[in-house]
Image (cartoon, rainbow, N blue to C red; front, side):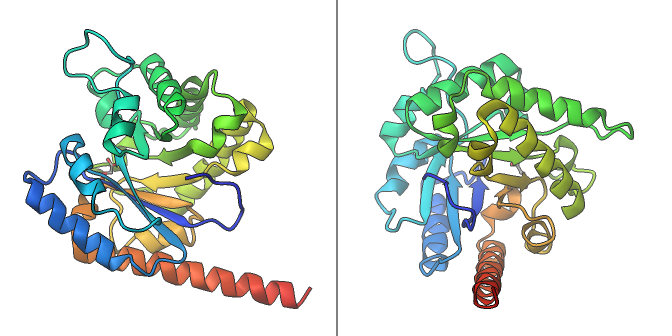
Length: 275
Ligand code: PGA
């Protein structure tokens, strides 16, 4: 999973959180996604199931546009840390990416320093990092931008330019996440924040490397608003929570991402011909 080109696939990342309850349910959902996404040409499905399910699902991973990942990793590498699972262990279990800095982990006490340590260990284990950033509240004075910038800067502290090909950022405003969300952000909100995030990333790793870092939108993504974020919002993909547990909704989102990819490829071919 390395990103270098400008015409890139949409990443449709599914954060299953602590769902579903049973292994066989996870397998059924997973198989449904595999079937729905066999002919993908313009998008990739990334699935982060609960950690105990990763290893079993990996056996059924049959094509390269589908990736399995974890929802968190430890800020330690090994030793006497009861209950912790390191990035390297997740990699051995079959994780190709790991979500780091999700607001639900931050709400449980994860600090910016913890996030930075996890990012470093995951990159060292050669796992792609899906870093989540986002403000708790939107204020009218743009203070929230300083919050986002500080989250990005601290998470990427010490990350070498060469690791940027294993970095994906998800902008997830906390007020837009979960069933108690005020509302999803708008595609315009996302678009302006994602440009800002790319600018902050470029201060850390340089402009060239920053261009290869996809920025996804997350927070109450649904089959009804996904296309808006991908098309108007120019999102490089989506981080999908609740809706990713519904196969029929995911089928719609996948079909939308593929249709948009086809339309963009067609436009760029036309543009090439008329140059
Ligand atoms: P949601 O969750 O889509 O259920 O709002 C998104 C997330 O927390 O990543």
